[in-house]
Length: 290
Image 1 (tube, helix red, strand yellow):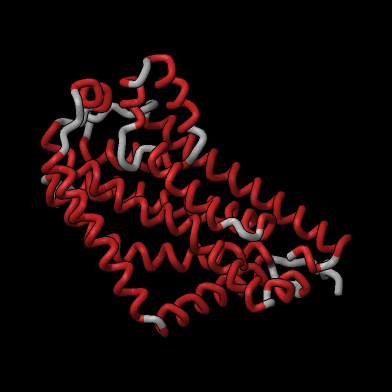
Image 2 (image 1 turned 45 degrees about the horizontal axis):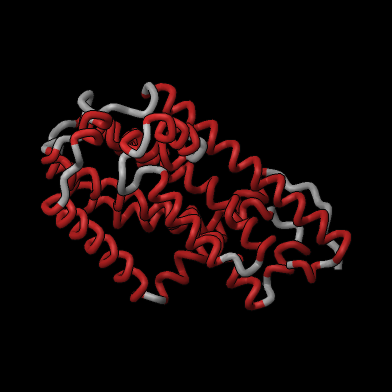
């Protein structure tokens, strides 16, 4: 069988996307334990952040570079852990879909049919992001209460805007890793490593500003490397709008928004190119490569 070269418009894209999201909602409804698992993991994350906030304090260099005071550590960790749920979605949702379809032998059908394959890859990340948003809201309220901002409409609005931008950036990043899952096949160990590396490196648990504590020159280099990834700007902007002007962002706020948009588009573009590469290989060598 060969891949079909059929012109696919927005109607096809939206139908495939909608059916894919609905499929995931139906599946998660069948496995209610998974829903409780998501809820408990969020509760454990917030509980861990509370313990970190009580036990740990940032050293003077970290506080000076980031503007985070010793009594704000809980909010820092809680925000990082809460946003990390969307980071995990980018890695595991599309990869889980691809691995499942490889296991059941249905991935080939996706590539033989004229259905929009980009929509197929987007749908699991969007579905999981919507579900994660539902469980994120209670954690978000706890963070705002702890920060004393629960009645500040500006803070609530801007931080939720960053959360929504985080979801969008994770969706584009998720497509990228779905393609990696198709090309590499047994990519889960790689995904585990990259997920842990990105979350730590991009500032989920340690302010990127504090890298200068290792070495001033090395810290600056690491800061610019971290700026390549959309995660970094999501974490940084969330903290800026949470803490206010006392927080020192990596770059000017408008530059962070610009970087977030550019890096998201870049990774989506790379994913689209990888998709074209897979389709070309499938045409030449057959669907056994999938």
